[in-house]
Length: 107
Image (cartoon, rainbow, N blue to C red; front, side):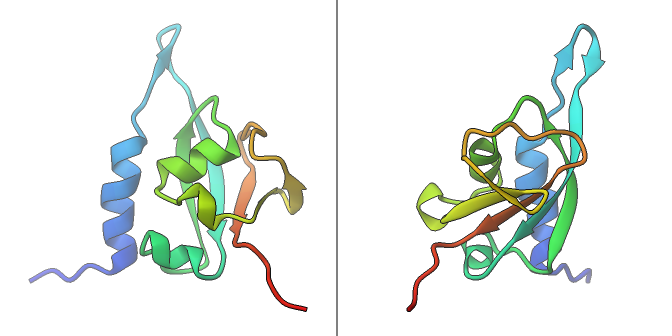
């Protein structure tokens, strides 16, 4: 019997469901990105580990990327691209490192 971790399942199901290749002028257009999900947001999508590298369709905003991988908008406090806080409508570029952070509370 083959055992899969939650991360294996997530990669095989969630990623394969939304990572469909689109053709533009007869060529596949995909971007390579690294995604890091922080704190309790990981629990929303059964994400294990620190980060995952994947190919995504372009164009895609950072908010749309979160929705594609199953993160509810209400769970995200802010987005970072290459360690800089960015608005949710910022387009993702090839080679970007995207991080999803929860709302920050405390005093």
